[in-house]
Length: 171
Length: 167
Image (cartoon, rainbow over all chains, first blue to last red; front, side, top):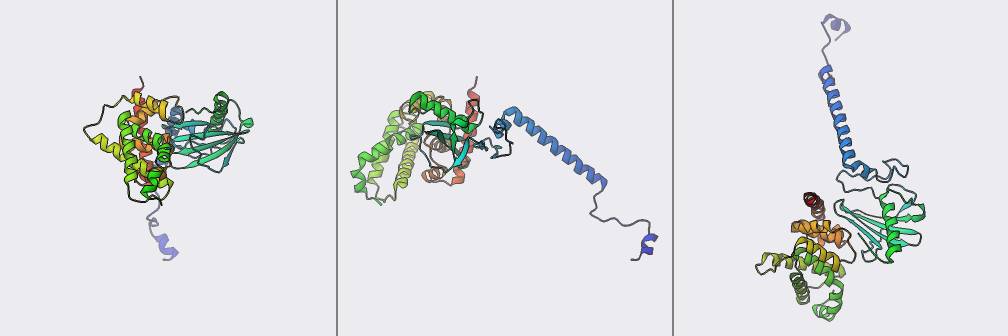
């Protein structure tokens, strides 16, 4: 087809898959709807406290929520150890309840915590409903008394527990 | 592997090691002290009589737990079962006498004891006896995925029970 022939026609035939303006509008509508639903979901999470659980301890430590976050859509995967100077990951020993100085059983949250004092540190083992197990060493001297960090808070409880009863364990 | 005669020789050690744990599991199912004690004794007797060799400690423990749960199920089905105690009483007894740690708030334990058996046993073993999902799957003869699902659904049921009870 030559240039002349094209000029002779009333108009160029449109590419069949070309997006019409109506389609683009629909796409934009859907995008706006999706954004709105995400915003509503965020608001609901804030109301139910789930968002706070997601960002557990991180903002208090001055870190971004994304760091070390494990997700909590099911309400189970509590972010056990977002990066914190006092909390360092370590090898899981599979410590028993009998060996532990402090235990926290959170059936409704889907996890258990076990803690044991080891000199200036507390060894903390976390077990989750989805089968994961994590362990951490918490440097007590580096933990604030008013911490909201789940592992730091539990480590403090453990030291208190040991001070109070010597060998008591409490859930 | 161990022969049944060798098992009989170390009867005392077996009882020391597993008795309280098996009792707690039986009690969480039966909610009656006498029936729970009967179930544990029956489990030990079956273990002594069992001809099949036991491969290792984990196998032995899993065998005993599984058998205890089966016996509990049989007792629950039978007509001669004794009177059960209230859930609150059951939780208090489990808490005060037999757990190797203290529970501050036993409302959750009460709720767990109210669960249907297919949720109760995985949840009880996972949270209160500190078993892994893999171990529970072995004990209950189920897939790990099934246990994870039951833990998740059981947790939702516990939440419901606790919410319903709230004044």
